[in-house]
Image (cartoon, rainbow, N blue to C red; front, side):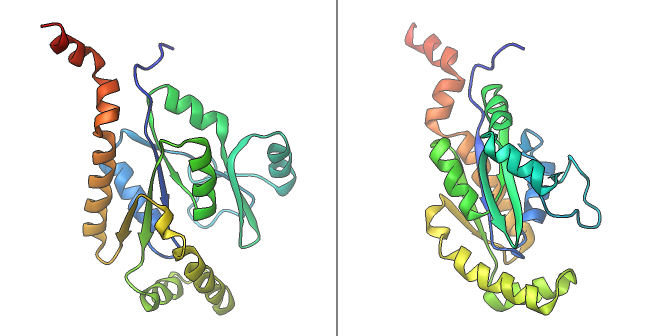
Length: 209
């Protein structure tokens, strides 16, 4: 495969559970097919409608721990008793090939990724209010009251780390939040430093007039 003349963009999108991150990311990928979603590994069981290899790579705990010991993960985290991790080699190969990659991970994973890829761009999705988040979590009908309360407590802790991200979107109106997300990803791609590398031949043409 011929190497790409430019490095791909690595987008990180994080949010507390129930903020609408997954729905926004799916809509973004549909609006901008140039962005590829990185598929993480997880030890949790598939939810209804989820497919192995598309939503996650579902593995047992033993395999996950083996991959971790062999240094295969760019980032990993334990969330509600389940483990999640992102393949370091897969991300590096895609970026070097010029592909734009999106990581849908929590704030802990985002912190780890930034240490490896300093040029990554991070976006945090906020719910419109704490009460709205409670309503959304209860409305999903997937969790018990005890689990919902745990998720709400974790959300308060998660939001305290939002200031470490480059951009923050409040998901009050879905369509507006999606427009914001699309605008942010496009502006990152058009940053001067990236464009200077991507269109180096064009700039050289003008320098030699």
